[in-house]
Amino acid sequence: MGLVIFLVGLIALWEGFYLLFVEVLNVYKPYAFPSPVGVIEKFFSLIEDGTLVEVTVNSLLRGLEGYIIAVIIGVVIGLLLNHFKYLQKNLKPVILGIQTLPSVCWVPFSILWFGLSRQAILFVVVMGSAFSIAISVDNAIKHIPPIYERVASTLGANKKQIYTQVVFPACLPEFVTGLKQGWSFAWRALMAGEVMTTSIGLGQTLIIGRDLADINQVAMVMVLIIVIGIIIDKAIFTNIENRLLKKRGL
Amino acid sequence: MSLVLKNLSKQYENSDKSTLHEINLEVHDGEFVCIVGQSGCGKSTLLNLVAGLERPTTGEILVDGQPVTGAGADRTVMFQEHGLYPWLNVIDNVKFGMKLNKVPKEIQEEKADYYLDMMHLSEYKEYPIHQLSGGMRQRVALARALTMDSKILLMDEPFSALDKQTSNRLREELQNIWMKTKKTVLFITHSVEEAVYLADRVVVLSAATGNVADIVEVGIDRPRNVYDEKFVQIRHRILDEVKK
Image 1: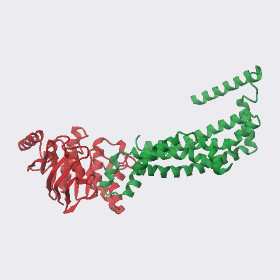
Image 2: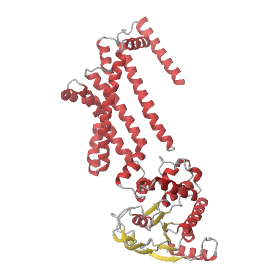
Image 3: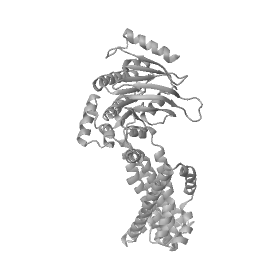
């Protein structure tokens, strides 16, 4: 509740600032400074003509597609890193290095290789997210208390059972945390890809706003990107994470 | 089921001193043997070797004449840490080993109930592990170990992380269970009192030489009383041996 009041206050302050500096004092030009009222109007007008739903669904589906590919690649690399000492010692530092690269840096490559296409954006999303998931999988397995495996093996577990009955459930909460982080990387990479290439989506809607000198559309898309990011983070990942931890008394 | 250790030695890399040196020991079918010694004498290493969690440098371990080559359900271990799985409730933890070994469901149910009842945990079947006290957790771990009907039960200081009162109660319960089941038990402890209370024979490991310093036949009728004259005598004799 306190947060809601704070946010309303913040928006009121923004509107006041806009009225004062743009409408009254004319310090800023109206095409360079958005207003909350303008943003909300833009939101409803784009909802009404159906574009906003279409671009949002398009972005989400594309993001989901890239994210699923990233999860598959990330889990495989993570398991390999964990299983082979050689890769742990040599490949992991490389992956940690690549991981620090902002995903937008992959855009030139993706355009050269895939053109201005859907695949180009998927490539940026996968590169932006898969390595963080790989590292989190490796770490999650490393953090399992050794006693879990010792107990299972003295109860007669074979290698496969140790993976399915012990390693997987034991690292699940940390794995979900890694998936959450992977998603936030994927979402950012998706926007970087969409802004840089031309393909129907939220990023492109933002760029159209710029091209039309419609700053309210730009701001509206930015707010929407934040809101969608938060909703997915809280409603899906944090929710699952908390349930898992609560069940284990953590 | 008999357990034989033949010239068993364990030496770690980066250490010129061998932890265990030429250990020879025979544990008979249905016998309760305790191993005592100062910390660092290699008691836990010895148990890990028998469990198959570590490999000996030289020598061998025979269970019913068959050499041990790795961990297996015929030598169930109870560790100092309970090692229960926090994502499973009490009954699923107890059934865990039986599930791994594909024991039929009805038998799993039956045995889990039987051992939980033995451990006075029937009311706590559905509880998550984190809501149990330390003593209850060790009792769940013991129930899980017993469901395996293993030939040999290995116990690595299972009560030493508990408070004195709880650990005394648990060793009393363990004695009762052992009198009922007559399992072969190899029990590691640093408490001489616990060893004399539980064991048929107490093996003293020497920290200095890494081999068996003495084997003491306890020979007191069960249930035992720690204040009994003979108990105190044996306890002092072993304490002197351990301190050497």
